[in-house]
Image (tube, rainbow, N blue to C red; front, side, top):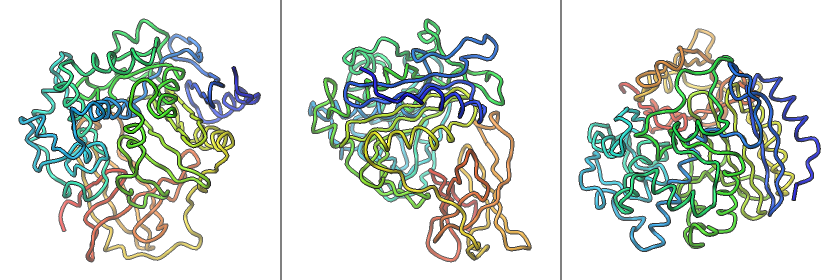
Length: 439
């Protein structure tokens, strides 16, 4: 049965064309009813059109799948949220003990952007976990939310050890199979058997289809149709359905920690972001891989879900202009208004914020100018160095220690937050902690 969204196709076509999106699939479900539309091409070299049955990578949306695998083990009594990961993985040499709960909620406190290619073998995840003893501790475990890819690699290794299976085999045995999914691929070798999207940058196909296998539990290569992703969403809307006990499905949606003020009110649960909209809570996750992006949002109280999959261009205008309002209308809720720079500009102390803030993959150079404005130059480092050049943006103070990019990108003013007591901020929080080079 189909939802009555008669203008969905036309609106998707128009927005994608306006914002240079190479290809996209947008789908909604409410109960057993589904509406979906597709636009663009899978690959500009072949011109093959996108259909609603095309496969796209879902990037970090896969973290919700990893979290579900972990909560299955909790439901079986084989794992406790508050036991340390080291109790399952004694070889895990992180700077401090970290619990399963902290890993699920991104509060482990250690450097999380660890992208190392450890090969394509079944031991790829195990090899990456063995390298984590070399990462720095950024904050005390449990103290602050900071998005952590490596934490989900550790969780994937926990699944491997307790299931006695490589991660992708556990994924297929305990999620893909039980959900009855027929168009989900865990690798390029599987994806090539279907009509599969290729990522694009500046309108051209990217040179790499997926990230390294060592990061599969964090979202390196999982790909599927919008329909298969909606099937996963509906299982969670049904409090776990066939794949997760209801108690554990509801636990995943319980707030664990509030996010720093990044422009919108939100908390993090056990694998899910929890956004507060007027009238209800939206549960979801975003993801990206080279040239591809994915968004999954659920409204459990209304039984509604939405999926957007793209393979090039800026997906934000499609989220803001189409996914968000339609989801809100179906669920009877509304999103918070977008943040915009205050007019007139708010004053601030340049000395508190100026400095160089770094992670393993990005450097943020924050400087003031003679007119009293604040600027940031963003430089990709390490594994991300090949995926972009340095860019400079003006920051405008929104409130407190939260700033927004003065110029909207895709109609959105992204926010960052400076964190730390004292005269000078210790961190620049951009969704993850970037540490000031020196105080």
